[in-house]
Length: 185
Image (cartoon, rainbow, N blue to C red):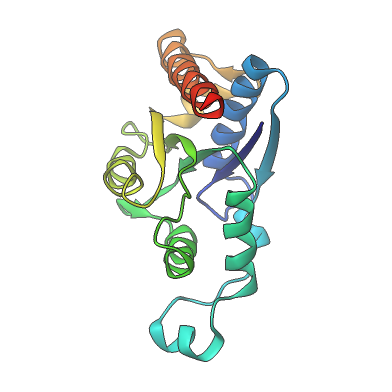
């Protein structure tokens, strides 16, 4: 079983990448034999999407590479960064390129959708955007979780607030069950 984990940010200190990798690690512990691929969006070099750019270049190699990476995995743990109430520019650009390769970007993969931010809403607005569109774009949304006030609640040891830790664990448990069921079909 293979899980693709990434944060939808290009920050070198991405709190969303940290949260995604932590949650993927929790799932890996439960699954035992799961392999987690920790992907960093900084490893992609994509021009800003436009129809003119698409006509000129076709589909960029890094968009094709990332689409193939999704296909090689059984599940996705994605944590959305919120920039001014929406997706980060880098993620939105990737998402736009991917949707030109295949409208079902997420290729039917089981997904644990996360978000976090330094603020008290924890990326709640971008979480709603993802929940509203990702299923239409081929994701099997198993569970979601938003962590508010990242710097107050997260450390190398995980989530310090027992209630929030329990909520994340419940989301991971639901994700693992959905993933196990999808692999048994």
